[in-house]
Structures are given as structure tokens and as C-alpha cells.
Amino acid sequence: MIDHRPALIARCAGAADVIAAVQFVRQHDLLVSIKGGGHGVGGKAVCDGGLMIDFSRMKSIRVDPTERTVRAEPGVLGAELDRETQAFGLATPVGTVSTTGIAGLTLGGGQSWLASKYGFAIDNLRSVDIVTADGTLRTASATQQEDLFWAIRGAGHNFGVVTSFEYRLHPVGPVLGGLVIHPLSQAVEVLRFYREFSVSQPDELQTWAGILTLPDGNPVVALAPCYVGPLEEGERLLSPLRISEPPSQTRWHRFPMSPCSRFSTRRSRRGG
Image (cartoon, helix red, strand yellow):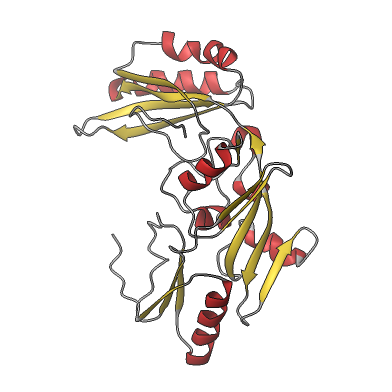
């Protein structure tokens, strides 16, 4: 999708490589762009004629189940982070699509299927290791480099090159989620129902509405809920979605894993 051509690509394996890349662009006055895990549809990860720092090799993930934290490198995808944290029954909000890289998502704020209950990615970010423009590796947190830590949590992507992220984790087990799809001709009624339904839903339930195009080309209106809590209570709360006007198609599953980063009408072993 992106027709940009960098002059050089630095496939970094660690923080030392990132420092060398930043120092190189300073020395040669080059444009620099940063490619995290992927899914950068805006095209800003790939520059024309400059140096692209590519994090696709930096995928280390270290979970501390006792402290309920995880530290991950910037090449990690949401699905990869989920897989490791779910080994301990834990999760953190890192997006809505499994192929999204955690780095760009977090630095931009980080909406998630877990957001109603646990906040955005930046609300759960504890610290980062970051190479600033002078080529120095720093740690930023609530107690170190506080202004820099404030800036990277949603204020923009141009404050440095993050080489690792530390997140707070939460107990997340099986979730209830899926899609309820209606013909576009019922959009007004469905969206009115959505407004009334969502205004009183608890934090454990997040429901989105959207206009989608099916693979056959037909536009539809869809409701996408995700309940994070006891499944029996979720069944009760979501029952109005099932007894509203008969949908064109319902795909409704109990997902055995967290909804942090994948959500699909296809049957899946995991949620989100």
C-alpha cells in the first residue's frame, strides 16, 4: 500500500543497533523513519530516500506474573503479546486487530477491546527504554524523565525511538464476543438500539457499532460486543442483542483468550 523507497534499512537486533542508527542519521543529516511490528497504513513508517529503522527482528517478550508486568520489544504484534501473557491468564490493552504492532499503537494512545475495563495502552504503560535524538538510551517512567514519559503517552511519535515497553497486566480469562450483523436498510433502528443499549452497559462490556462491507460487497450495520467477566453474566447482558430484530448473520462465540488484539466473524481459538 505504501510506495516509498528508503535509501537504507537498518534491521536492528537490539538497543545498541538503534543507537548506531540514530547517530548515523545525525552524522549524515538523513531523514529517518521507524517501522515497528507493522499495520502502519498511514505510510509514515517508510521514508523516501532516508534511513528506515526496522524493528521486525526485535520481538522479545518477558512476563513477570508475580508483579503482573510484561516487557516487550517494539517489533512485537498484539497477538504475540497476548499469547505470552495468556499463558499466565493475564492481558493488557494492546489494540483491536491481531496484526497491529504494539509500538505505534501504544505511542498513539492504544484503544482496545479491554479499554472500558482497563483503559488504553498508555494507561497501562509503566516505562519505556528510548533512544533520544542525541543518541542516548534513556529510561522514562513516572519517576524518571517524567516529561518525556508524559510526551510519549499519546502526544506524538517524534520524541525518540522506543526500544522496549513495560506494561501493567490484568487477570483476563475467557471472554464473550462476536458480531451481530443487520442489513443496511435497518441501520437507523439498529443504531438507535445501540445508543440505548450502550448507555447503561457496565465497564466489563464494550460494544461498538459500525457500517461494514461484507466479502460479497453488500454493506451492513454491525454490532461488536466484548464482555470481560463471568461468562454467565455476559450471556445475560448480551441477550438483548440476540432478541432484537433477527440479524442477517450472527457469529457468537466464547473466546478462550483475551480480546486484546483480534476480533473476527470467523471462528477463532482466541478473542479480540
